[in-house]
Length: 432
Ligand SMILES: *Cc1c(COP(=O)(O)O)cnc(C)c1O
Image (cartoon, rainbow, N blue to C red; front, side):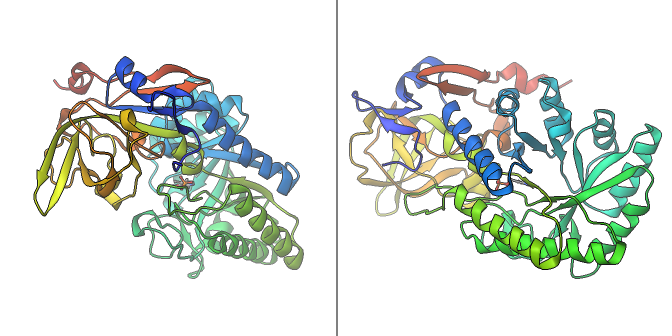
């Protein structure tokens, strides 16, 4: 009935998430609030893990791409599920290490990591640094030498694939700020340079072609292109690289009309490609890393708001204003992202109205959704925006000095706070 499996309606006609009444959650913890279902997150993680085990005989590792939703508790959950993570900043790395996340299962990404970030990674012996460019490679080699260590790296490769997704979330094509281009020979040159470096161990190659991708073919094509590069490296240097990281990007359901394939299907198809091309190219099957982010947390989270003013502009549109907006969910403002919206306390009523859900920021573009179907609502009603688990809390800002909402984790009908609501003191605490 809803885009996410963990959403339902209870006997009181209220929307539930993970078995908890969302209207009660709103009462107890206030709004706006992010709410996640822990069982749903764990279910998604296990599905990916199982699929790696089945398709690669256990010779692979799932890394949760933590920029989708980063906080201490999600790192604890990943650690308890025995998967890896990837981080893209010193802040994410710090948070993960602060709860004792195993350093060897951390991958560190980014197109412009700072000296300090690289040094922290080397000092903490994190698993793999995914090197983006030659400047970074040289800096890393010298940092590793300074600490008497060898840094295990992979190169970020642009496989030259144009995934059919939003321009801002595409990353595989040559005109991208991420990684080394294949077509120009840049990638091969970098491999040769790295193999000569005394404090670098080149473990393998990485690609990530974009996000919210529904088709399977771009993933298959990426695997093929990457393995051809493995074969080229082997023939030109005699070295057979051991690890292939295929990134993340699996699409999820935001609207009823979205039709993502089960993750297992992508994994099976890509595994077939990997095995087929390895055989054809005379390579042994490398250790496979994957990095799902959105597909682990996206549909496991929702955001709750309280309705304030309802402004009907005759023949134009009806604005339903809520107590949050682009500060807690900038995705509509950034990408015109689709969401399903439900009135949590009228969940059994039909969604008969067509409305625009607006935030409270001083910005006309501060909208959560336009022309969306909603029940007839009034001030005081609770709205739930579904599938906001990925790139919402992690992209939140304090625009207009709005404190960030809390994150509530629900498990087996019990709700607990995992990130506290910010206060005005938090928002101004760095001010002199
Ligand atoms: C963002 C990102 C991911 C995760 O992408 P999703 O679409 O959330 O699965 C994986 N790998 C890298 C390098 C990324 O930048």
